[in-house]
Amino acid sequence: MEQTAEEPERRYVDGRWLCLCSENNTFMEYLNEEWKSIEESQVEGLKEKWDSAKSSSSAAVASSSAASAQSRCVVDGVQMVWNQTSEQWLPEVDVNEDFLAQYHANYGVSYDYDSMPKPEPASKPVQEKDKEPPLTKEEKKAKKREMEKQAAGWVDIGEDKNTNVYVSGLPSTINEEGFIQLMTKCGVIMNDPRTNKPKIKLYRTENGDPKGDGTCCYVKMESVDLSLQILDGWDLDGHKVHVERAQFQLKGEFDPKKKKRKLTNAQRKKFFETQQKQFEWKPEKPRNYRPVCECTVVLKNMFTLTEIDENAARIIDLKQEVEELCARFGSVKKVVVYDTSPDGVITVAFESVEHSDSAVKMLNGRTVGDHQITATLWDGKTKFKRQETKEERERRERAWDEFLANEQQDAENEKEVTKDSEHL
Image (cartoon, rainbow, N blue to C red; front, side, top):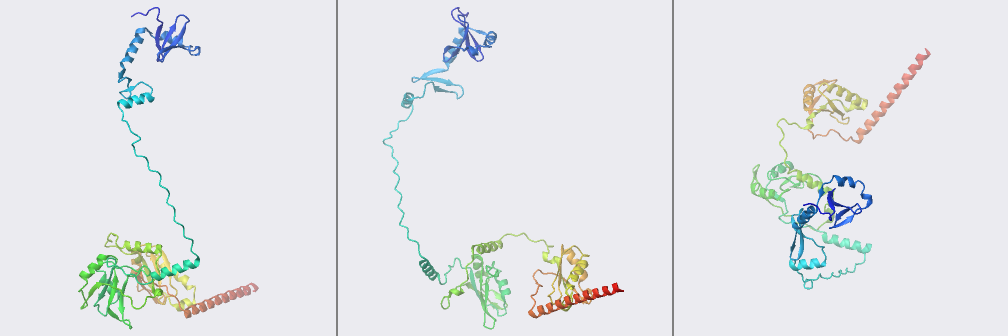
């Protein structure tokens, strides 16, 4: 269709529809379904784009209007438009009160707000009870004494928590080690948190001889049941052992002075952690395993106390001599001279058991000076440091004073000899 003379020419330039009015030679833009004049400041450069743009007739605008009409429809009196992004029909009206009223009338749900339950009024805060006046020092002390008086006495332990057993029929020759060896057949014995020793007791006579009975405290209740089944009737050195649950009774009046002091929180925590470690799984040690204590060699009869008293510097000389001697067998970590030991003990710590084995093999029975020494591996338990008596300390101090006096006398004699040589 050709364009008429009355209708101005329209062209699509930079995404917008423009037209050129032939009367005043001005550009107009199609905005919001009406033609509006373009400001002169925006006309510059628009002429070239107008000439390069393709010419369009009113048919193009009509086709655009027809396409726009296909994307609109009326549903229940509401103008709807097709949304390409969400692919659904949306109302093409302003969302106001009239629109909402019409929408809820057709699709919505009406609510009767008057019939809905109203929120309950906030409850009044409960008035606090009248606070009691603070106690005085005398009242606090009286209250504390009353609580201590009520707490005084023995506390009965239920059978479900009592892990103590009473054992009778034991031989009169039994000792604590043998009793522990017998009771550990059925479980782990609890340690005393204060002494860290097993909680067992053998009853003895006034002379110290075992009566043949005792008590044992296990960690687990299962150990109690197991001991009643296994150890009750056990034959121990020709004696029939009898095991039963322990029952404690108070003899005489309660004496609070004999009551043990309570453990602190830190002591209680450490005790439970140590007790729990006894039940942890530990891998088996290899067959060739040897304890660290066997890296230390114990040399005996290396000196006498008389030698140390006569010459205190002998301690330093012995340490150097032993360190040089043992360096032949391996790396030496530490040498300790126990100068108060009557056995003349010196310990040598090596880095490995191979070195300590070589030292024992070569030094045991060897004669060093006037002494025939013995060399053995340390068992990890024996203590060689001995507290000297008052007489020994006085003798050592007297010997040390004599040693210093002799040293001073030697120094003076040396000075006199030097002066005499200078005069000559």
